[in-house]
Image (cartoon, rainbow, N blue to C red):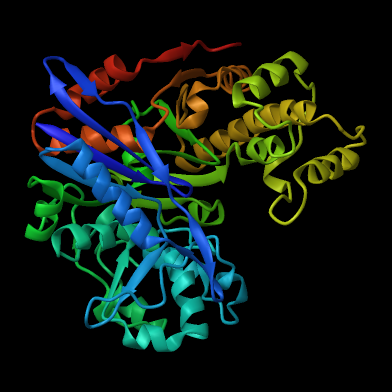
Length: 454
């Protein structure tokens, strides 16, 4: 069988093909296309037609395949009217509408009902912002679909979402693992527009006759999945290992026995969810390498991340700042770094590579501090860090992490969600057992282990 995976990111959509060849995972080179937002009227909108056209082209060029699964980040959604036409566009989480909400919900109330630490760009907050500014759209809406669910609807004609996607909305009850009717009513939202929630891995349907004619073959389409949940699938986790997925932003987490609604979890800004396969997870969202990306924008054109890594390692800045306290969203990153250095009585930095070296050192210290905090909350000790995402190919960050944490660091897939997506499809088709997934990914993508540095 051949499997096609799509991973919708904030800047691009990646896709790849895989099939099992004996004891190996035959993985076709990851390809991608741009995923753009545009200013239209008062909002930043995703270009839905362009994304779906590119998805169709990728399916056509990749086929024939037996199974398709689209995963995505959380939060953003599409509203459909009674004719299934999009109304209001698909507003990006980068839009500032949630900053203008005048009546904020009680965060403790949300967490105690959903187990989810609700960020200001979450689906719940976006709906509350839309309710205040464009209530007529919500009144007209018949259906709400998350981005991958909307594309699945265009492919199959079926409206459903997965538990891993729905749980990120801050609107799913922690006990029933279904839409929280009481909460939705209390917030003044319309329950009827929310789609049925399916278990991750459930078959949504086959490509519609129209799409089959366009791409030239038929295929099964799997219900959507959340990218973080699939990153767990691509990680080798046990009781002693914690996952650290680092891209522009980072996610730190592990498997747990059930939802944890304690005050420590709530005040620590942790999030409960369910990964494919039904295992519960606890995750915290952190700063990633976006600061390096922002510094790179000020460097000479053509400067590569490898060059930044090499020069940062050669400089090896001896101190660090508190990354969690760094104000970066609406100010120059270098200025923000220097303000932090000034507070510590240290000299300012002018060289961007030196600033990058400081960021590297500070990120490693920041991650170790957060791992220690999670150990305290969960009463567990993690001796290994499984590093996935773009930073898994960053040797300097991995070395610093091993040095500062005194833990073993194992690097996993760069495209963790995409790898987890493909493996999960294989597990669902029963072509791969859960027990052998790690060995298959390791053979296909390799591993690097940095031993504990005492």
